[in-house]
Length: 101
Image (cartoon, rainbow, N blue to C red; front, side, top):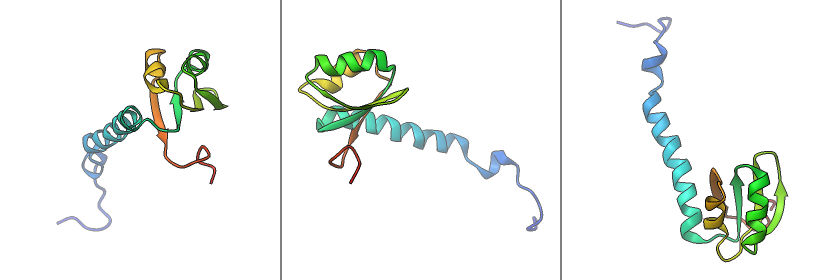
């Protein structure tokens, strides 16, 4: 019978496959949500040199840009055009003001 001082192998302590499934479901769900709900603003993960022109071309407005992300107000077809331009993920921003409440 194990005691409190016995160690448990990491493979039994953390169900890695389950954790990966949850993370994948979260990322895929957020990305699909951006296509379904047509949010007022999005955060885009991808190469900024391709994302910024795609935002401008789709009648969006740039809010903030970092090294691997861009926050933007969306135009009519912004989310689809961002994926077409090579965005890795496009996530909706649910609160007003780009998350700055």
